[in-house]
Amino acid sequence: MKPGDRVVWSYVSCGSCYYCSVALQPCLCRNRASWGHNRSDQHPYLLGSCAEYMYVPPSCLIVKVPGEVSSASAAASACAYRTVMHGFDRLGAIKAHETVLIQGSGPLGNFAAAVAKDHGAKEVLVIGAPAPRLEVAKRMGADDTLNIETMTDAKDRAEWVKIHTAGRGADIVIQCATATAMVEGLTMLRDGGRYVSIGVGGKDAMVAVNRIPQQIAFLNVRSGEPRHWLQAIDFLASRRDRFPFEDMISASYTLDQVNEAMAAMASFQVVKPVINIA
Image 1 (cartoon, rainbow, N blue to C red):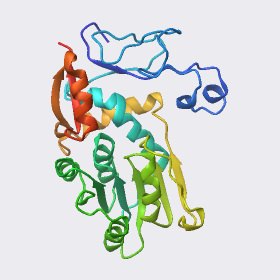
Image 2 (cartoon, helix red, strand yellow):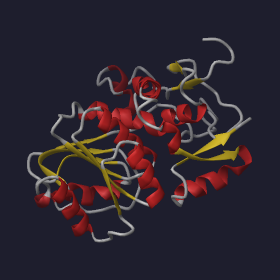
Image 3 (tube, rainbow, N blue to C red):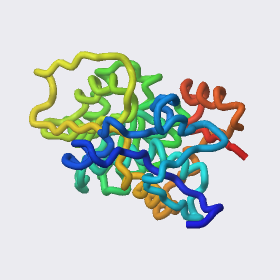
Image 4 (cartoon, rainbow, N blue to C red):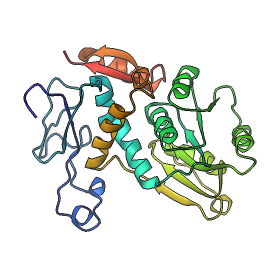
């Protein structure tokens, strides 16, 4: 590593609490430092985020970005993509006969489509909106997509999934939208299936426990552990000829346009914006 190298770096956990030293789950550390979530009047103070400079704590895992990975994709790997890698880490193997349904066609969902296809899924389905994001999902590995703006009834969407899965429901559902989507996603999962919740936010929602499919495995993730930053970068580098990762970066903004970038992403006008500092 030398001055001028492009790098990404992981969040920092304390290394000595129960979650770090006993459970070996550093992403659950109560003293973890993460950009944009910590108070700026407490150590380690302002870490930076959408800024010209950032403070990199000494104990970070620093990953060098290889030449074949663009700076924009590398930046995405340090946020959405490493969280997706964490989700697949917890999910485990995908069998060759399994159908994976992904809820959401933003950065999380479209990257998850590529990982699911790469991991050997028989079929990858993506439910989301608007149409331009779903077009990206197809290029990222989705075999079929469903636009929630044109199919607005949840029962019809569940039926669409059953048509693709011989009436059973998906073997695996990966929630990459908001936590609220879990209510609908569970109706699309087969008995004995696996559900992975990655997306956060949304309104509180009630789940009818007696209607949850039988004998399922439910998993969720928070952010990522240091190794997931490396996994995301390696995936981008080694699969660049198979998936058009640059299609995920749909707009570029300058630092003084950061509010415009956030608004464009929140309104689904773009998949993933990039903020150029230089």
